[in-house]
Length: 372
Ligand SMILES: Cc1cc2nc3c(=O)[nH]c(=O)nc-3n(C[C@H](O)[C@H](O)[C@H](O)COP(=O)(O)OP(=O)(O)OC[C@H]3O[C@@H](n4cnc5c(N)ncnc54)[C@H](O)[C@@H]3O)c2cc1C
Ligand code: FES
Image (cartoon, rainbow, N blue to C red; front, top):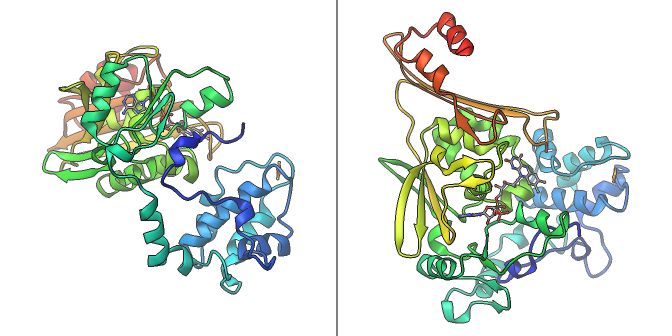
């Protein structure tokens, strides 16, 4: 039960396992060769995972830096030995001759891209049909299906839901999967902000958010690991609504809004209004999040976001804090302070915000806001 990906979500995709890296003549892939040469082959549980994390990096970077190797391995936790030989392998795997199978050129070739494209089912009539697993192709179909069967479980990247099955052994209700809805895979920029659809992965969402808000860099880097971010979605993090979810404090501080849909009805709410109490949300049965809108940065805005956790990588936060403050002529025009891990829900700190608004931008003001 180590894999949290639901099998039907792989429809239309190519699954690459560790067994398929070796060439037909038995020649090891450069990633495998480097791990052997650097003595990085460790326990049988983790080594396939280390190989595949490095393989994903191998396809993206000809000569990865140590920092990139560390990021690629951030989701692979070793309990027995250590990381040094594995990191060494990651740093030198690019020095080996290109393999006959799974070279970078092969992975990115037009032939391969065409083959993958041909696997996709784009029309409603050819959608995968399995009992208990519905995969709508467009937003109208998704909204209608969920409204008609409000007891269904809406599945996005499955990085929370997968654990309900593998760790909690829960019997899940019929699933409606939103990952194939084209409208929800979009990221759009306009004068009112950055719109991120509900099927957009965390990797793509963080990358778009960083263009507007570089101060989110550490938050993005410390959110889970590349495989989890390549599957999980930003809206799934919001919808799951854990009080220690990482993205919400920053999005609330920035004034993000949610676009919701129930059947044919749409509405928009400020993100912080979604959370009514512990695991209670302003989301009717059969209603879904279509996307999140993040306002553009303002000229006089100062923004910062922090995550405190026991470990740097791959750890849930103890506390997250995000602060968006607008300062004009040395005075605070507006302040939005949002926290996770301080209450049953992600929430703003209204008393501290009031204590800051209209005051000079000074340490004394921060001290009085802290006391408030
Ligand atoms: C190894 C690991 C590390 C992790 N690290 C972090 C971390 O550092 N920080 C952090 O905050 N989280 C972390 N998570 C949790 C998880 O990855 C995030 O919460 C993720 O954003 C969930 O998105 P998803 O698409 O996978 O959601 P799913 O698992 O598909 O769904 C989660 C919940 O949201 C609901 N939902 C999903 N989309 C919608 C929608 N559009 N409308 C209404 N409801 C919806 C689902 O029904 C379900 O109840 C981690 C998880 C794992 C397995
Ligand atoms: S390699 Fe598996 S626990 Fe260390």
